[in-house]
Image (cartoon, rainbow, N blue to C red; front, side, top):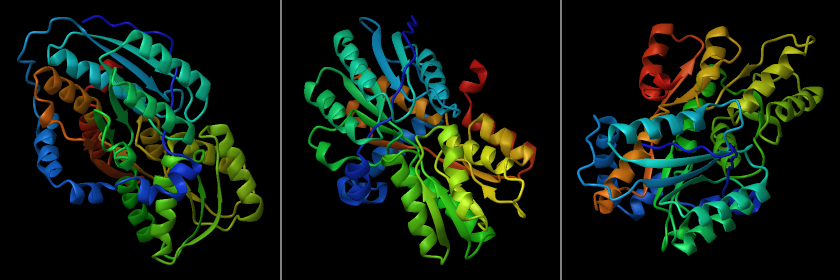
Length: 369
């Protein structure tokens, strides 16, 4: 194996304020809708899940040369999801005896579109076998469509599990991640149980797919139970802007039971703003989203009340296993979507139980630390 790391940059894409938010129900298949439309994918997904959870079985064919993997990720954030994805991907590729070169690029999430476009152009010059990307805001849809039209590299879209209908005739090699709506359902159940008929606030990431899937879906779920959204604000997905949004919210609305956060950085922005509000007469609960190491520490310390924890490394393993099947000429066995599991973790969890979750979620990436 040969590892080559170029500059660290990143990205985060998909449909748009309009492209994702107003039309998401028609532009994308939810997982349930997708399986209803393509029932053959159900067995593919079930069989593939067994590969992901099972012991690695080495590549069964000879490689003529190293494969080349080009990665563009929104890795400059508090969440360790993206770093762990690469760690688990490369660890599993090593176990599978797959020879590869990998070039990682990390930037801030949702911003730097021109930089992201330059990275795509760089990838096309490099001509990798596999291009791993993600999707969140409107400008990125055209970039992804361009990559698909070129047919020069196999595109893996990470952190999206709702296939985009317009690409179905020429879909990405794979969608992989943890379904945002499924994770949101777990948080909705928690808040409904502990704060029935709540008054709450919400802080989004920037406008786009993730905010719509995690934020707007939460609002719809809460409305059905009689909870009242008193205020919501967008951020730029950073801790600083989330703190500013929270301070603006609290100027008008201090009597809220909880503030729902749409990402890790947003969650820590909210808690930092709350810590400065000395006039608050009651504790306002805050959730994390994703269950990375810093969130879990914050749960144990009481800084965060609850989070939904991805079984993180499964997504890196899924990408590695899909590449193996492809190299073995078994691409027909790869499901179009892999969506991993979650665990709900709240501040009452026993540390031993949390360690059990971490051993599963970080089964490869923990060893790389």
